[in-house]
Structure formats: C-alpha cells, structure tokens
Image (cartoon, rainbow, N blue to C red; front, side, top):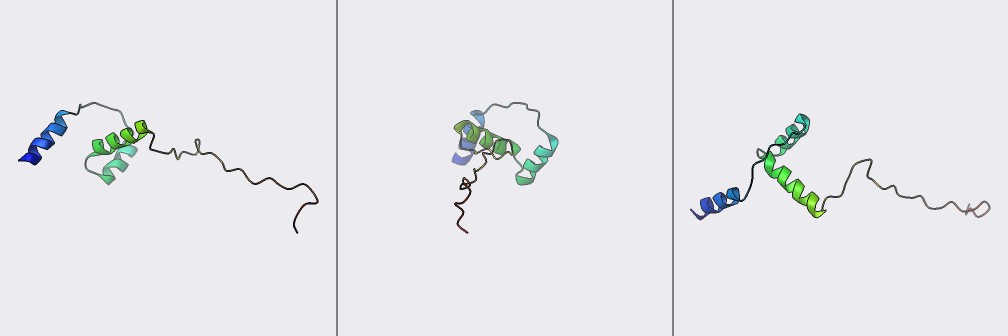
Length: 76
C-alpha cells in the first residue's frame, strides 16, 4: 500500500500541459517507451541543468589542424 501512496503523491506534484511536437519525433520516443512524458520530462531537466552536450552540426566546434611548418622545415 505504501507504493500506491507514494505513486499518488508523485502524480499530485506534477501538472499536465499540452504541447505541439513533431509526429516523427513522437514516434521515435514511443519506440523507446510507452510513457513519452517521462522521456520529455527527463530531457527538459537535463537541459535546464546543462547536462546535455549539443550534438547538432551547427553547434559543433571544429578541431583546429596543427600549424603547417614554414617552407624548408619539413621533416622529410
């Protein structure tokens, strides 16, 4: 019975909202779990704490190549 009381308390602490989300993205989330709201909530918490590293092509920092030695200093 304690499990039911704890579960009810957790649900009471949450609020229900409505969002618009891409249907393909939602299908990918549903492939992972039957409870998409849990995945979305976890992702938002990580994002707010700054735990997620962006992995988008537009946000990646490129590694610099080492400098090329001046002419005549090649180690051939």
